[in-house]
Image 1 (cartoon, helix red, strand yellow):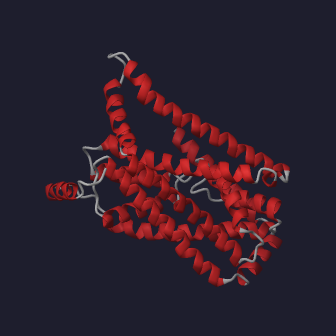
Image 2 (cartoon, rainbow, N blue to C red):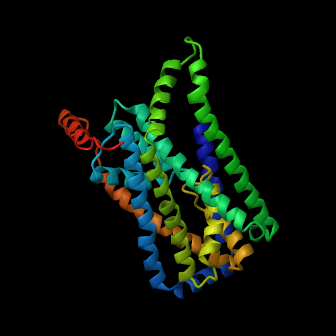
Length: 335
């Protein structure tokens, strides 16, 4: 019942935002005019820019899986990743694909469920860590610029509050699994499972080289995402510099990660409309189009994931397990 209420609220909220964005006939006319004048060269440039981030994301995820002893061929890892992108299109926030990946990863490795959970969690944590770092840098460098209007100032402080919350939650999770867990009484509910999870969690701490590689890969993931929207801005002739877009997008990316609308639809458009108008002087209708065209790249990847989903089937028979053991031995040099 609660899930139905939440889903209904999300659907109503999404529809309301979309109606608000497109209710004006004049705005729709300006959008059609801007699309007709769009530079297709920049739109084509944006495609490999957006795709490069997904490639880096797949490599990062493979590194984290292998830390936990889960070895999957690149072909199947790519398929599973794109299936996640497909589910991202209609699940709240930008974490819906994580749940899909986790579901199928647990079916691929039924004996490593807690490791599968931690792999997806760590993938998200590392990505958020890179986002925090880039957000802090851009906020410090452009503090005054990001507060040029009251609306932009409010959104900036929302970002700061979210970043502080993420840092506290991350430190708290390490403290619980590292310090307090050993002091829990033997009869504490689920203590054994928490201990097992802690052991898998700390495998990441031992694989420092792998974690460093995964963290460094998070920056091309982020920058390609920002770059895709910069390309659509250039295609529409908006006066937005690379620095402007890379300063605005951490705010947008952080806020739309909240599970409010499916894949941030409508929410992202309204945020970019406000920030591009207030900080860069971009007309409202063009700001909405920049967001829609930038998101279109990821819709395309999601559609590819939907096609992949038709052919993807977890393999759990004995021969598959034997192949996994062979792959594990062959890749024994990984941390």
